[in-house]
Length: 275
Ligand SMILES: [Zn+2]
Image (cartoon, rainbow, N blue to C red; front, side, top):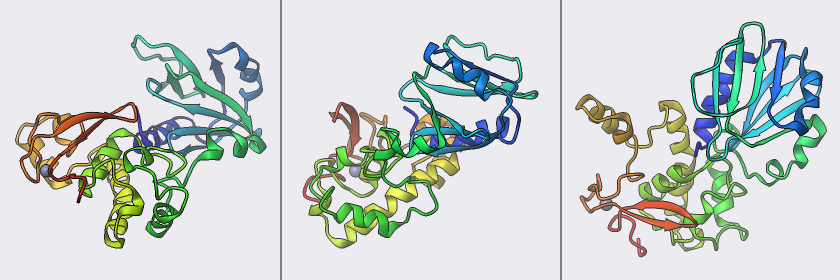
């Protein structure tokens, strides 16, 4: 599932293709959205914003297309009139005279007026966006220490979009590992140094992932691994999808468990409950 950094990068690609341009053609696959095709054609794309894992394409006529990629949704950008050769269902196409932004496989698509955005059931529950410049470490510390979240298990809390928006499973696993924390630990059990460190990495790791195209491993280590012949997928993570491989810190075998319905990868030595 794409997480905040991947959606932000996709939004930038979409913006490059359609931002500031007049919509020449618009297509919705879902019948209940079809009547918006005519309303949006001829308007200008103002911005392409992200809210955690959701994307909002904003138009000059006061309408906005909300999309959430969920598990399978994927954006493609290409020249106007072209279509990628893929076995996916096209759900949304926004085309100008030069380019097309195409969303495949996603089913969570709606059209909102400007004044409806704040009340959208996904957007109105979101915590601060991990990639937004105004989200800072003291803000995250406050949330970790506040009554609402301090008694939650970190394994579930980190992917709760009302805590912070944009963290998904790989970032959750990598953040817990970097901090030496078991998914069973709760923010209320951490001392101030651990809390500060955790808060800093909740922001730093997604930002590193965004900047490097998905690397949450130590960047120099990952770069060296790739130079030595590893694939990008092999080099990018510290624990995620590294089941049965040795921990980079202590050599213990990485294990995979299921928590909150999602696979969790961890080092049982570095992330012991009592740490
Ligand atoms: Zn370890």
